[in-house]
Image (cartoon, rainbow, N blue to C red; front, side, top):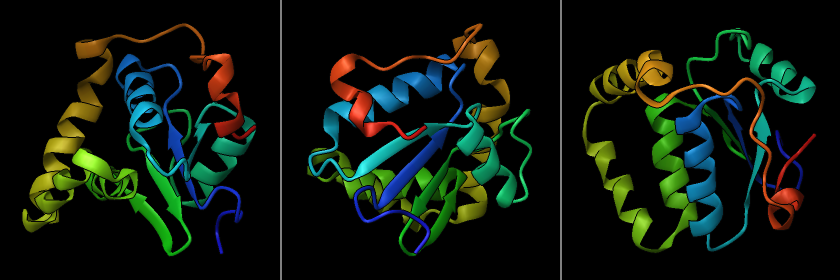
Length: 137
């Protein structure tokens, strides 16, 4: 198993990206099960886990969702998040009918331009106190 039983889903995200931090906040508000935990790619653990997947943590280009079944990248990670969150958001998982190559092209375009479109912070975003238990390292 790649994750601990207390946090079966671990989302690695770019902690200095406004879009990524906003996405994490969205998940925190809508994850009905509370199963999803978070780790910034810029943290020691996040960098280690990112490198283990053959990716460069100094130039993050994909969020990663580590699940008990394995690791999801790019659009697969986003769609798995929607599925795990449950509720109305889970309907987005139907987008899997679109071929992964097309989904990942759109994901890559947004990821490559995210700082230009949404901005970048000088340091990692810090969660509100009530959310801290959902963050690893």
